[in-house]
Image 1: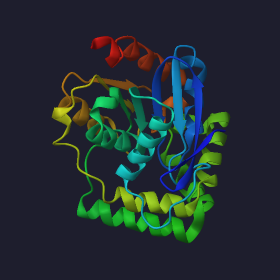
Image 2 (image 1 turned 180 degrees about the vertical axis):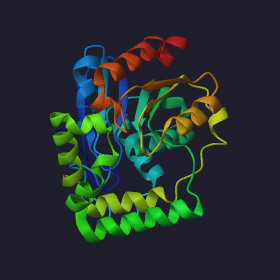
Image 3 (image 1 turned 30 degrees about the vertical axis):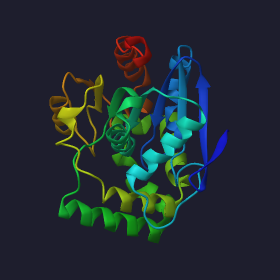
Image 4 (image 1 turned 60 degrees about the vertical axis):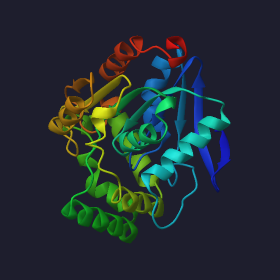
Length: 269
Protein backbone atom coordinates (compact mmCIF):
# COMPACT_ATOMS: atom_id res chain seq x y z
CA UNK A 1 0.00 0.00 0.00
CA UNK A 2 1.56 3.35 -1.01
CA UNK A 3 2.52 5.90 1.63
CA UNK A 4 3.74 9.48 1.66
CA UNK A 5 5.25 11.67 4.34
CA UNK A 6 2.71 14.46 4.62
CA UNK A 7 2.50 17.20 7.22
CA UNK A 8 4.54 15.31 9.80
CA UNK A 9 2.95 11.87 9.40
CA UNK A 10 3.12 8.82 7.17
CA UNK A 11 -0.16 8.81 5.29
CA UNK A 12 -1.25 5.59 3.57
CA UNK A 13 -3.57 5.53 0.61
CA UNK A 14 -4.73 3.34 -2.23
CA UNK A 15 -4.62 4.42 -5.88
CA UNK A 16 -6.60 2.33 -8.36
CA UNK A 17 -7.56 2.73 -12.01
CA UNK A 18 -7.00 5.64 -14.36
CA UNK A 19 -8.94 8.54 -15.77
CA UNK A 20 -10.87 11.32 -14.05
CA UNK A 21 -9.88 11.19 -10.34
CA UNK A 22 -12.38 10.44 -7.60
CA UNK A 23 -11.24 10.97 -4.01
CA UNK A 24 -13.14 8.66 -1.65
CA UNK A 25 -13.02 9.86 1.98
CA UNK A 26 -14.02 7.31 4.59
CA UNK A 27 -15.99 7.91 7.77
CA UNK A 28 -15.48 7.10 11.44
CA UNK A 29 -14.36 4.60 12.66
CA UNK A 30 -13.43 3.04 9.35
CA UNK A 31 -10.58 3.11 6.84
CA UNK A 32 -10.10 3.22 3.08
CA UNK A 33 -11.19 -0.41 2.63
CA UNK A 34 -14.82 0.59 3.13
CA UNK A 35 -14.70 1.66 -0.53
CA UNK A 36 -13.60 -1.75 -1.85
CA UNK A 37 -17.19 -2.30 -3.04
CA UNK A 38 -16.74 0.55 -5.49
CA UNK A 39 -13.33 -0.33 -6.91
CA UNK A 40 -14.28 -2.96 -9.48
CA UNK A 41 -17.15 -0.83 -10.76
CA UNK A 42 -15.39 2.52 -11.10
CA UNK A 43 -11.68 1.75 -11.60
CA UNK A 44 -12.33 0.89 -15.23
CA UNK A 45 -13.12 4.53 -16.04
CA UNK A 46 -11.81 6.57 -13.11
CA UNK A 47 -8.73 6.92 -10.97
CA UNK A 48 -9.72 6.18 -7.39
CA UNK A 49 -7.74 7.82 -4.58
CA UNK A 50 -8.65 6.34 -1.18
CA UNK A 51 -6.63 7.61 1.80
CA UNK A 52 -6.55 6.31 5.34
CA UNK A 53 -7.28 9.48 7.27
CA UNK A 54 -5.02 10.70 10.05
CA UNK A 55 -5.42 8.27 12.96
CA UNK A 56 -7.28 5.62 10.94
CA UNK A 57 -6.21 2.48 9.12
CA UNK A 58 -2.47 2.43 8.69
CA UNK A 59 -1.97 6.21 8.77
CA UNK A 60 -0.22 7.53 11.85
CA UNK A 61 -2.13 8.80 14.87
CA UNK A 62 -1.93 12.39 16.04
CA UNK A 63 -2.76 12.41 19.75
CA UNK A 64 -5.09 14.90 21.38
CA UNK A 65 -7.47 16.49 18.90
CA UNK A 66 -7.56 16.45 15.10
CA UNK A 67 -9.72 19.05 13.39
CA UNK A 68 -11.57 18.13 10.21
CA UNK A 69 -9.94 20.89 8.20
CA UNK A 70 -6.58 19.41 9.22
CA UNK A 71 -7.65 16.20 7.51
CA UNK A 72 -8.74 18.26 4.50
CA UNK A 73 -5.23 19.74 4.37
CA UNK A 74 -3.76 16.22 4.47
CA UNK A 75 -5.83 15.37 1.40
CA UNK A 76 -4.67 18.55 -0.35
CA UNK A 77 -1.02 17.62 0.21
CA UNK A 78 -1.69 14.06 -0.94
CA UNK A 79 -3.24 15.28 -4.19
CA UNK A 80 -0.44 17.76 -4.78
CA UNK A 81 2.08 14.95 -4.33
CA UNK A 82 0.15 12.88 -6.87
CA UNK A 83 -0.04 15.90 -9.23
CA UNK A 84 -3.84 15.86 -9.21
CA UNK A 85 -5.28 19.33 -9.75
CA UNK A 86 -9.00 18.51 -9.99
CA UNK A 87 -11.14 15.65 -8.71
CA UNK A 88 -14.59 14.49 -7.76
CA UNK A 89 -14.86 14.18 -3.98
CA UNK A 90 -17.01 11.54 -2.30
CA UNK A 91 -17.20 11.49 1.50
CA UNK A 92 -19.30 9.43 3.88
CA UNK A 93 -20.36 10.61 7.35
CA UNK A 94 -17.25 12.29 8.85
CA UNK A 95 -15.78 12.03 5.35
CA UNK A 96 -18.66 14.13 4.02
CA UNK A 97 -17.89 16.81 6.59
CA UNK A 98 -14.22 16.74 5.55
CA UNK A 99 -15.23 17.04 1.88
CA UNK A 100 -17.32 20.12 2.71
CA UNK A 101 -14.30 21.64 4.47
CA UNK A 102 -12.15 20.81 1.45
CA UNK A 103 -14.59 22.56 -0.88
CA UNK A 104 -14.74 25.58 1.42
CA UNK A 105 -10.94 25.86 1.35
CA UNK A 106 -10.14 24.75 -2.22
CA UNK A 107 -13.26 25.02 -4.42
CA UNK A 108 -11.18 25.29 -7.61
CA UNK A 109 -10.05 21.68 -7.15
CA UNK A 110 -13.53 20.18 -6.78
CA UNK A 111 -15.26 19.00 -9.96
CA UNK A 112 -18.23 17.56 -8.11
CA UNK A 113 -19.35 16.66 -4.59
CA UNK A 114 -20.90 13.42 -3.39
CA UNK A 115 -22.00 13.66 0.24
CA UNK A 116 -23.10 10.33 1.72
CA UNK A 117 -24.94 9.84 5.03
CA UNK A 118 -23.45 13.00 6.48
CA UNK A 119 -24.51 16.17 8.29
CA UNK A 120 -23.57 19.76 7.44
CA UNK A 121 -24.73 21.09 10.79
CA UNK A 122 -22.36 22.06 13.57
CA UNK A 123 -22.65 20.74 17.10
CA UNK A 124 -25.21 21.98 19.58
CA UNK A 125 -24.07 22.35 23.21
CA UNK A 126 -25.76 19.03 23.99
CA UNK A 127 -24.33 17.14 21.01
CA UNK A 128 -20.89 18.60 21.79
CA UNK A 129 -21.14 17.23 25.33
CA UNK A 130 -22.20 13.83 24.01
CA UNK A 131 -19.32 13.75 21.51
CA UNK A 132 -16.77 14.54 24.20
CA UNK A 133 -18.29 11.79 26.35
CA UNK A 134 -18.01 9.37 23.43
CA UNK A 135 -14.36 10.29 22.91
CA UNK A 136 -13.66 9.68 26.59
CA UNK A 137 -15.55 6.37 26.48
CA UNK A 138 -13.52 5.16 23.49
CA UNK A 139 -10.30 6.00 25.32
CA UNK A 140 -11.56 4.14 28.38
CA UNK A 141 -12.98 0.92 26.93
CA UNK A 142 -11.10 0.63 23.62
CA UNK A 143 -12.42 0.07 20.13
CA UNK A 144 -13.23 -3.64 20.45
CA UNK A 145 -15.71 -3.07 23.26
CA UNK A 146 -17.00 0.06 21.53
CA UNK A 147 -17.56 -1.98 18.37
CA UNK A 148 -19.38 -4.72 20.27
CA UNK A 149 -21.65 -2.11 21.85
CA UNK A 150 -22.46 0.04 18.80
CA UNK A 151 -21.98 -1.88 15.53
CA UNK A 152 -25.72 -2.44 15.21
CA UNK A 153 -26.20 1.31 14.81
CA UNK A 154 -24.08 1.54 11.67
CA UNK A 155 -26.01 -0.78 9.36
CA UNK A 156 -29.64 -1.65 8.78
CA UNK A 157 -31.09 -4.64 10.70
CA UNK A 158 -31.17 -6.74 7.54
CA UNK A 159 -27.48 -6.00 6.93
CA UNK A 160 -26.56 -7.46 10.31
CA UNK A 161 -27.23 -10.84 8.74
CA UNK A 162 -24.96 -10.17 5.76
CA UNK A 163 -21.93 -12.01 7.11
CA UNK A 164 -19.25 -10.65 4.71
CA UNK A 165 -20.36 -7.04 5.25
CA UNK A 166 -20.75 -7.50 9.01
CA UNK A 167 -17.33 -9.15 9.31
CA UNK A 168 -15.65 -6.41 7.27
CA UNK A 169 -17.33 -3.67 9.30
CA UNK A 170 -16.41 -5.35 12.59
CA UNK A 171 -12.80 -5.71 11.49
CA UNK A 172 -12.53 -2.05 10.45
CA UNK A 173 -14.12 -0.70 13.60
CA UNK A 174 -12.39 -2.93 16.14
CA UNK A 175 -8.95 -2.45 14.53
CA UNK A 176 -9.19 1.37 14.59
CA UNK A 177 -6.86 3.08 17.04
CA UNK A 178 -8.81 4.25 20.09
CA UNK A 179 -6.44 7.21 20.40
CA UNK A 180 -7.00 8.17 16.76
CA UNK A 181 -10.78 7.77 16.94
CA UNK A 182 -10.99 9.84 20.12
CA UNK A 183 -8.83 12.59 18.63
CA UNK A 184 -11.11 12.79 15.60
CA UNK A 185 -14.23 12.88 17.78
CA UNK A 186 -12.77 15.80 19.72
CA UNK A 187 -12.01 17.55 16.43
CA UNK A 188 -15.51 16.94 15.09
CA UNK A 189 -16.86 18.60 18.20
CA UNK A 190 -15.21 21.80 16.96
CA UNK A 191 -16.40 21.47 13.36
CA UNK A 192 -17.96 24.34 11.42
CA UNK A 193 -21.66 24.67 10.83
CA UNK A 194 -21.84 24.54 7.03
CA UNK A 195 -25.57 25.20 6.64
CA UNK A 196 -25.13 28.87 5.75
CA UNK A 197 -22.36 27.89 3.33
CA UNK A 198 -24.36 25.30 1.37
CA UNK A 199 -26.23 27.81 -0.87
CA UNK A 200 -22.85 29.06 -2.12
CA UNK A 201 -21.78 25.66 -3.47
CA UNK A 202 -21.53 25.98 -7.24
CA UNK A 203 -20.36 22.52 -8.22
CA UNK A 204 -22.59 19.58 -9.18
CA UNK A 205 -23.62 17.83 -5.97
CA UNK A 206 -25.19 14.50 -5.12
CA UNK A 207 -26.48 13.77 -1.61
CA UNK A 208 -26.97 10.08 -0.78
CA UNK A 209 -28.56 8.58 2.32
CA UNK A 210 -29.51 5.10 3.47
CA UNK A 211 -33.24 4.77 4.05
CA UNK A 212 -32.63 3.33 7.54
CA UNK A 213 -29.69 5.51 8.62
CA UNK A 214 -29.59 5.72 12.43
CA UNK A 215 -27.14 8.64 12.69
CA UNK A 216 -28.07 10.95 9.78
CA UNK A 217 -31.56 10.03 8.53
CA UNK A 218 -33.24 11.28 5.37
CA UNK A 219 -34.49 14.64 6.77
CA UNK A 220 -30.86 15.67 7.42
CA UNK A 221 -29.87 14.64 3.89
CA UNK A 222 -32.84 16.54 2.48
CA UNK A 223 -31.85 19.62 4.48
CA UNK A 224 -28.53 19.60 2.61
CA UNK A 225 -29.88 18.78 -0.84
CA UNK A 226 -32.54 21.50 -0.54
CA UNK A 227 -29.92 24.08 0.44
CA UNK A 228 -27.35 23.30 -2.30
CA UNK A 229 -28.36 24.77 -5.67
CA UNK A 230 -29.26 22.03 -8.14
CA UNK A 231 -28.27 19.20 -5.79
CA UNK A 232 -29.69 15.73 -6.33
CA UNK A 233 -30.90 13.51 -3.50
CA UNK A 234 -30.80 9.70 -3.64
CA UNK A 235 -32.26 7.47 -0.93
CA UNK A 236 -30.95 3.88 -0.91
CA UNK A 237 -33.72 1.49 0.23
CA UNK A 238 -32.86 -1.07 2.88
CA UNK A 239 -29.52 0.53 3.78
CA UNK A 240 -28.33 2.11 7.00
CA UNK A 241 -25.37 4.42 7.52
CA UNK A 242 -23.16 2.54 5.03
CA UNK A 243 -25.10 2.16 1.77
CA UNK A 244 -21.92 1.74 -0.26
CA UNK A 245 -21.24 -1.49 1.68
CA UNK A 246 -24.77 -2.67 2.38
CA UNK A 247 -26.28 -2.05 -1.06
CA UNK A 248 -23.27 -1.62 -3.38
CA UNK A 249 -25.11 -2.29 -6.64
CA UNK A 250 -27.74 0.36 -5.92
CA UNK A 251 -25.15 2.78 -4.58
CA UNK A 252 -22.80 2.33 -7.53
CA UNK A 253 -25.64 2.82 -10.00
CA UNK A 254 -26.64 6.11 -8.37
CA UNK A 255 -23.03 7.36 -8.44
CA UNK A 256 -22.50 6.11 -11.98
CA UNK A 257 -25.52 8.00 -13.31
CA UNK A 258 -24.43 11.16 -11.51
CA UNK A 259 -20.83 10.96 -12.71
CA UNK A 260 -21.94 10.47 -16.31
CA UNK A 261 -23.33 14.00 -16.18
CA UNK A 262 -20.22 15.55 -14.63
CA UNK A 263 -17.50 16.77 -16.96
CA UNK A 264 -13.96 17.59 -15.78
CA UNK A 265 -13.39 21.29 -15.20
CA UNK A 266 -10.64 21.23 -17.83
CA UNK A 267 -13.24 20.34 -20.46
CA UNK A 268 -15.40 23.29 -19.45
CA UNK A 269 -12.67 25.90 -19.79
